[in-house]
Length: 124
Image 1: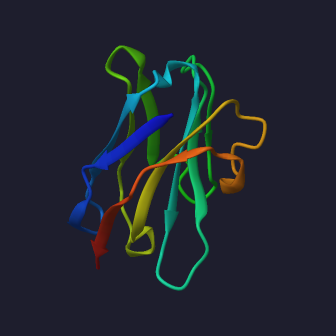
Image 2: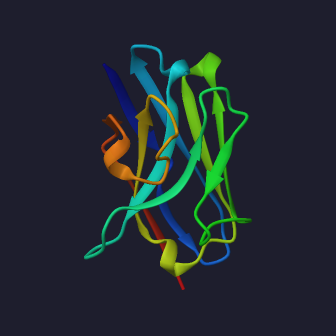
């Protein structure tokens, strides 16, 4: 079992930045691929970014490519999402998730463990 806890959400103006953190506890997450997803009110949960357990491979949704950066620190059992140039349409609850591999990195149903989420609100 892996427990995940997100932090770092908040209210920011358009064009601003936030850094989300996801801390893992329980079984070491170092062998898990990690993903970030988000869900806005009335919308389905959507893929944002993913990173392999080695940290060498990263994947992004087209909507965030060039603005968001995912990274991991296995020594700290943590994954991060640096979000720059935020837009009002980035407003959502952001979730981190863990999976055994990245075969279906953009499919939320492929992930085994989920955090409770952290709210990100971008004002215009």
